[in-house]
Amino acid sequence: MDLIIALNKPKDITSQDAVTKVKKILQVKKAGHTGTLDPMATGLLLVCINRATRLASYFSGLDKEYRAVMKLGEATDTQDAYGKIISRADSVGVDKGMLEEALNSFKGRILQQPPMFSALKHEGQPLYKLARKGIEVERKAREVFIRDIELLGFNPPFAAFRALCSKGTYIRTLCDDAGKKLGVGAHLSELERTAIGSFRIEGSLTPEELKSVDINGSGLEGIYSIDRALSWMPELTINAAAVRAVIHGNPLRADNTLILSDECRKAEGVRIKSQAGELLAVGRFSQERSLIQMDVVLA
Image (tube, rainbow, N blue to C red):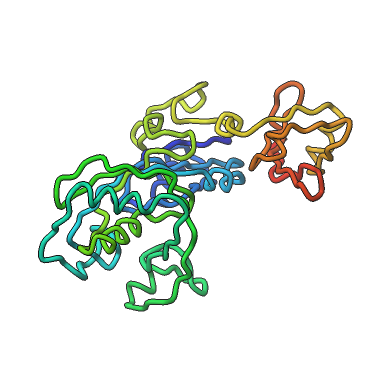
C-alpha cells in the first residue's frame, strides 16, 4: 500500500496528529505529511503512505492556495487568534480600497521574517519552544512568492482573502505585515488550505470519511497511487536494457539512444516507466551532467 491521501485536516489538531489518525485508520506503520498546517488551520494535508514518503519533497515544493480571515485592529504575539494581544488600535479607519491596496502590495517576490511561534529550528530546537519560554532569537528573512492575492469580503474588523503562494509562505505573517502597513495591526483569525498544486480541497477526505472508504478500490476520490499523484510530472518510457539500469539506481544518460524532451529537461521531476507502463523510478535531469539521476527507485 503505497499511497498519497488528500486529507481534510480538522481544526485544533496538529499535522502530526492527523498523520497518526491516518496510520491508525489504514493500519500502516509508515506515513508522513508534505507540509505542516498549524493546529488552528483546517484544509488540505497530503499524507504519504509507506514508500510514497520518499517522494514527500516533490509535493512540499508545490504552490499552495489558502482562504484566510484576518482581524484588523489587534496584533498578537503568535500572529494568530491563539496568541496574546500585544497591541490594539483605538479605531480601525480602514476602507475596502485601502485594504485592497495593502494586500496587493505583497504580490510578487517578498521577504518574510518567520514568526517565533513556528516549527523552524534554531540550534536544533523548534522556535515555538523558545517562544513559550519568552526567548526571542534572530531569524533571517526568507524570500517567498505571492502569485495572487484577492480580497473576498470585508466586514470590519474582519477581512477575508484568498492567497496563492510559494512553499514557505506564512499567512499569519502576511496578516501581521498587512496590519503594520495599514497602521492598525492585524492577526490571522481563520485559515483553510484549499489547494496544493493541482490537489483541491474539494477532492479530499476527512478522517471520518477515510474510515468508510474501501482503500483497495480504484480511482477513489482523495486516494492516489504514486503514479496518479505525480501525474503533473512528465513521463519517460524506456526500453528493456535501460530498465535494468534504472532498477539498480543507475542514471540515464541523454544520447542518441535516449532523446529527452525539453519538458523532461526542465521539470522538477520525471516519472520513468517501462514499456508496459510500470512506474520504475522518479528522477531529475542534471543539465551539467546531461543525465537523469534516480531520486527514488520504486521497481
